[in-house]
Length: 317
Image 1 (cartoon, rainbow, N blue to C red):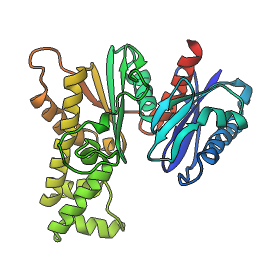
Image 2 (image 1 turned 90 degrees about the vertical axis):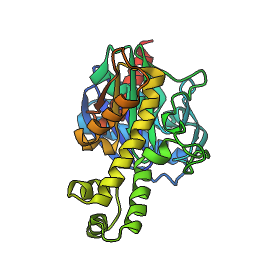
Image 3 (image 1 turned 45 degrees about the vertical axis):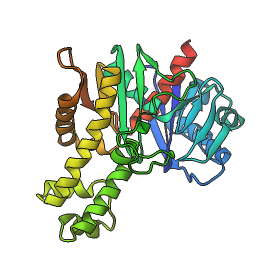
Image 4 (image 1 turned 120 degrees about the horizontal axis):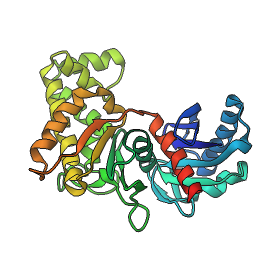
């Protein structure tokens, strides 16, 4: 039997057919067009699973269940997205709408929780405590305790990006000011890069951005690696912001393993080493074993695998 895992993002819907042990046998993606009514998006997700089964030559009848990783506040028991600010959904019955197109068991999970479960399943299974942080458009993540996703009593626990690191600081999309997300997301990094470019018009960042036709999360990194002082200053400060939030998480959970994912994690050791050193310096724990901090390995597949594993776990209960 197989499970379908769907990673619903603001830009793309990615889906895969996954074996019971977490291996993707086939995957596909389509644009989300997030401005649409959620029902249209859900219909596309269901149709994508059908296309996947056809592409893999695996009958839909062999897909035991579908897991969906969805951004926002999720009621997993009911399959409802109560609220999402990235895709316009309020009290959206995602599971119910999905079944109108494809009548299979459907399980809804927060997208960051799903990605955390994917990384845990493949790279940290057996760890008593595990934290996953994803640095992308926003800052998300998930916490796994004794193999189970920590959701809080109401299903919306572990909104890691919305812990505050600077009271009355930068405005966050959630409504608060000073959230970690407002400093450590790639969106924030781009804003920081723009500000540095304006202050340093001779910086290599300006040349890189002009050549690429845009300012991206990589602009300051590319400049820093080429010896640009202004670019290096942006990157160094960005590392401080990342480390501040991770230190908070380590101080709260003291996880066996903490994994950093998201698009910026592609920087690997260039990001990991300075961030880990900063966390080590500020971690409250002085004499007990330290949390192991690593870079994610599943990249974009984490959400697909985790959503499928969430469906598998729900079916096995």
